[in-house]
Length: 123
Image (cartoon, rainbow, N blue to C red):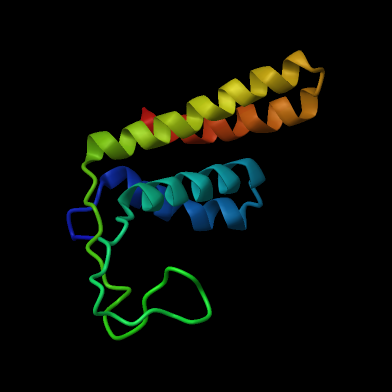
């Protein structure tokens, strides 16, 4: 990650300790999930290694050796980061509607609270 990381990511990171100290479970869960989604979006699958590298005898298809795990990560701009957080919020709202339709009001309310926590970062 570069010094010009997305401000929303930093806002999420800054808010996480406060949510944990306040024992705000919906906010904590939503923030952790959003940060994980951002990190996953940045992950780059390393290119296939050439036939000259060694492979592990313990795990099929893996490579071993110095530098094998080194890979550049994708840099996300602020717009893409906002899209990810917005998608996380939308997924929670959709799941809450499904739970509510099945009569599971408590789980629906939890997901709506998580969506509201993320919504605070999107304004």
